[in-house]
Image (cartoon, rainbow, N blue to C red; front, side, top):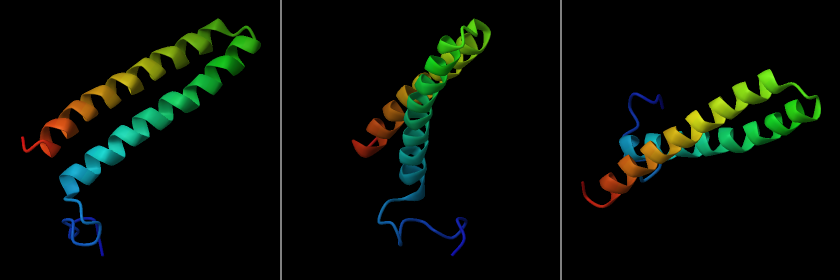
Length: 78
C-alpha cells in the first residue's frame, strides 16, 4: 500500500493526524540528538559548530511546539 492510498484504515489514525504525530516525534528526536552533538562540539571547543547545532535544536523545538499545537487542536475536534 502506498502512502497516497492510506487514509487511516491500516493505522486507525487519519493521515493528517498521523503525519503531525510523526513530525512532532521527529522534531523532538532531533532536538535530543542535537544535544549530544552540542556536547561533542563543546568538548572539542568548536563554538562555531556548537552554535550551529544550538540554532538547529531551537528550530526543532519550535517545530515540535507548532506541531503539538496543531495536533492538539485537531484531536480536540478542531
